[in-house]
Amino acid sequence: MKVCIPTETKDGLKANVYGHFGSAPYFTLCDTETLKCEIIDNGNLDHEHGMCNPLKAVGNAKPDAVLAGGMGAGAINGLRTAGIKVYLVPLTTVAEAVKALQAGKLKEADPACACAHHGATGCH
Image (cartoon, rainbow, N blue to C red; front, side):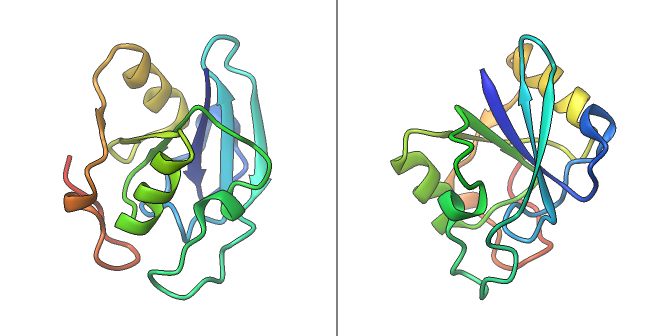
């Protein structure tokens, strides 16, 4: 499974999960089987609040799932419409987030618990 995780740095599995999907400087794409990571710049970093285009943000990555510390309802709904699952993950490292997903410890994001503003975290 290919997962996309918003991160502040380009440190691969050691990078910390960023608190808000839309304003993350980078996305770490990780194959959950091989743990191979690829880093992409957030192509939609400078969007207005509430105007995040999640598919533009992750570019042509086409992940199976997104693991984020927080995300607005528009981004959650946009990703879900595109067939991409969205999971909320505590702020930890990419490696720990992937382990939590593999262990079935993450719950799918609910638009009702979405971030109301940048920097906020959703319901966990």
